[in-house]
Image (tube, rainbow, N blue to C red; front, side, top):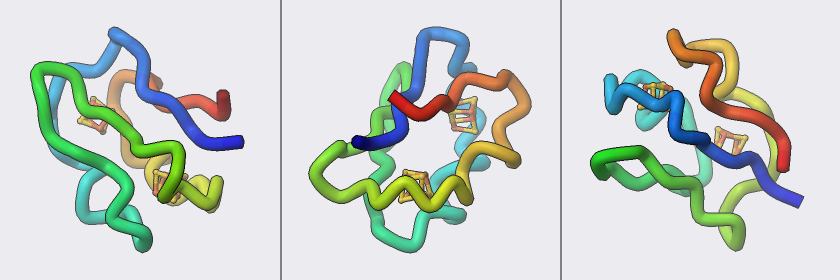
Length: 55
Ligand code: SF4
Ligand code: SF4
């Protein structure tokens, strides 16, 4: 399991520094590397677009 960023992402960057596993990468839409994500959930609450969900 891993968290996933959907197309509601507005590329604000708020989630990036919250991840303790360096699993989030920048892009037109930010992307979570499922191999690195530990499902800690730290990124979810900072997203202004509610774009991050457990996959
Ligand atoms: Fe990183 Fe945790 Fe979000 Fe996964 S759930 S991307 S480990 S902050
Ligand atoms: Fe995209 Fe949400 Fe991350 Fe901002 S916090 S970059 S809107 S996923």
